[in-house]
Image 1 (cartoon, helix red, strand yellow):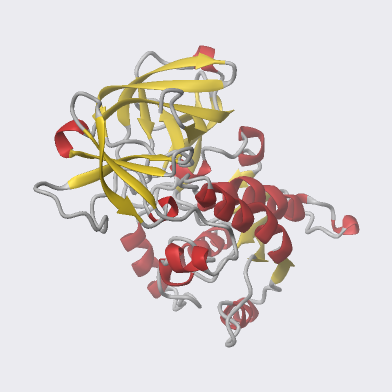
Image 2 (cartoon, rainbow, N blue to C red):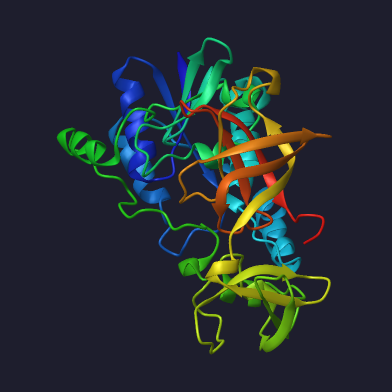
Length: 358
């Protein structure tokens, strides 16, 4: 089987490529250039040297223009709207498992690689389910599982992909790679947002040239729902729902951001006792499994660093209303809501939107 392997220069994608090669597949390394490399060339020189050592030709797809248009620009626009976008999930949907997958599968005569499938180093699984068929499932290593970031990718596209690290653990792979005498060209873990230097999105947004909303009022919401003005904020784009630190508000108890009201340019905060949310809505839903096949017991993640929480889901007009069994930290509009079953299969993913009365 001819498999194009998306290699970033990190350990995970390198292990995926080597594992497939050892299994007897014809592997073709494929590197997507999403952002301008640093002066030293970034991952490319090391990747070319490693592929040469393995007797493989590295293919590079220059996708910088599309990445700026499809990922970076929407990221900036969402922050202007006081939303909290998830650029990694968007990149997976339109770039890695969109344009890059197309390049991998396209016939050679049409400028593609003519691969039968594309593999990546994601910690996620594609497994057969008696009711769902071949479906996305959380990876074995719960601390690295990336199924949440893949929940917006269409199931048809995912079924053309392979995840060799599905049942592997990160620490196990470090030893496995060392035994083979290889080292990743980029040994450090990749930063959270690849196009934001030093993960400092505030500085990035300030230099992006966007018209960011300016200072406004901060309102304290009491347990009775009544709001009163207590301070000034420095711009809604500087905050996110659930944030506690860095608010710059002196108060008798810790305060948390519960809402960013773009219409009023108002930041709404509350004490911990009034923080929890019992529901949220998600639109632009990507159904990984048809809803009639969903089990009665469902779980939802509205943040990457969160265990799936038990919830009920009401579906209407392609959107989801999520009703949590227990109160949750307020979900941030713009983030992803991923629905799971009890076995870790992903049933759907959508983009969190503001509640109508919020």
